[in-house]
Length: 464
Image (cartoon, rainbow, N blue to C red; front, top):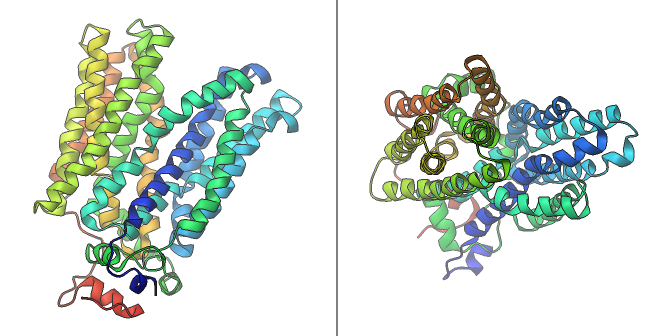
């Protein structure tokens, strides 16, 4: 068998698997965001109003939330490789189809309906992507490495902005609004073949050495969650499982923590540039450049959070406090964005926002998806991740709406900043005072034999 052939060396296949899901996550984020780059040209070509363009922009978020639970159920029923591969192919085709809207619609109404439908379908199809990422991390990474692994794929949004926003802008200016959709859709279609060729479970991957497999399994990875016999033997979803996932205090703190993280993200990509222009007097170009520093600091914080969390775990901290401490500290750092309401200079605004988003990155890197990986029931990993991501992404449409209402009613961006900052304080207090111990839901304690020995006996691997 492959592990016997690779005995005597240590492979690092799990790192390449992580790079693959990072790449797919960047593509997914870019597919979501390129409409904002092409939006002005689309609005002009089809004669859309700002409200109509806003309707198209919102279609993805609503569908993404709706699709979370069905996506999780598909993952738990059919496995990560099959579901991720099929959805990657379908969402890439939906992205490609956006570029052909002008060929299949003769008027504004038809174009509006078709673009809304395609973006809605894109949201539904992409829904399993991040729960699938978490499932891959659970399968391939021991507990002591999950913080770093989760923080990396969670940082895909920053890579997508840094790489594809400039590329998309150049494509629109040079060739037309359709070309970002053509290019990204084509990249996604090619990625399907890479995913199909490389992705395997740890025990089935031909390049995994016995040393790496031992490291993965003994570290607590659930290497068999995608095995055919495991998927076949999995009991039908029950009301009891839904109740378990929706009544657990620890999980609800994680759900709300994700909601608060995403609330900050959507404030940043929706109202922050508008705030800089309308409340701070920047021009649009300067406001655009001003968002770069907080984004870069957010990425740095995300990588740091996962690293710090795993280091604390390696130094003997309990998994509860190794995950919770960076989250709590990071969210309290993020709460300092409230100070933007009283800082007089624009340079000071960018500095405090950069500090706040570094803290937000630390919290996201150490907590949220890492905690889901550590706590999801073995028989419902996909469903748990989907509920978590679905509840969190409600903030994607609620936060911009509520911030706008606050500013409209009070005439004050300062009160809006307090509203956003309050999310950080609430989340930190929940993790500190309410969450309790972080532990896998429904896990039975095992003793007397290592997990590697227990699982290795099933396929003839001798534990040393």
